[in-house]
Length: 419
Ligand SMILES: Cc1ncc(COP(=O)(O)O)c(C=O)c1O
Image (cartoon, rainbow, N blue to C red; front, side, top):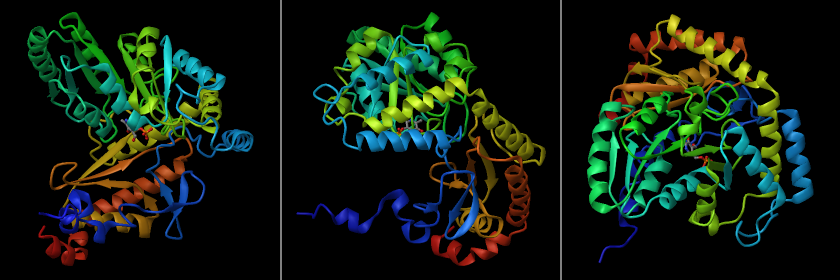
């Protein structure tokens, strides 16, 4: 009989197999110093374009003060136990009420981590007779939620309304035989390429089909919409989102998440979300910290204005210099270049070591072979000078990519990787 670990000794998985070349530098890098536009990487200062601290709250002095005071008052244990058993408090309830109001829903429920919360919410919303229809580019937490579903599921082509309609037709036929309903899942903002989910058009399909809409708005919450209530508000369809999700891990620069919906739906979910019923409640310092951050979102519109000043400068600067930034409609700023994985590695090393620019790279198999995606996250802490320095650096690295410098620099690696 085979040893269970045999496969692990042989193969570290699609990403793990690059560990020797990538670990500590391209993956699992250690960014040091206080979270801001400039941090330290391997002892050198870099402009950081890879942290989802959109509104610059992570290191805001008022936030740091409240976090520290809450930690001193409550420690990191309180409250102990799951919400249902012994982990419920007035402040958890207050935060839920304030979040619900902020995203214009009747009720909200806290989740101790966004990922598990999403998985559980998908799981709790459907029974085996129901059908899920979801965007093929959905975040891993949606995919994992769908994996728990015992019934049928269909994907539609990314943001393609014709494909969604076709799949809704199939789902409707199937639901008529199973006696179930249909759940459509989209993201508010797709975090890799920055496109907004086409929520307005999805909602319009409710005229023709009977389904409920669940939106993961991790990147839209706090950054989009007049009040910061996200992609639904931005597109004028917040009311038509049946279940809304956002995490604290981006605009709120913390840990935790929530779902919001009609009261009856939340009342059902709080008794059926397995990841919350059987896990420790969100700890109090995070609850108090989230109340403070939410208050700042409501009362300091300049945070979002500062963010968008940087987003606009970065995106228009890249476009005017002829860079391909795809079809982003959010703060997420992708830059697409042509090149192999070894070239991408040489390019990113050059950016970090010689230009002091730190951004994430995404390559095949996440995106098609031959493409390099530099993914940039502007924040309210960046300055216009950061943008100019970055744009100049990008001009330089594009030239070196095109004149074959990185190909020559990575010749040995290209050979080793068979590129
Ligand atoms: C679209 C999306 N959904 C869910 C999550 C998970 O949230 P959390 O980090 O709170 O677990 C993320 C975080 O990366 C995300 O980008």
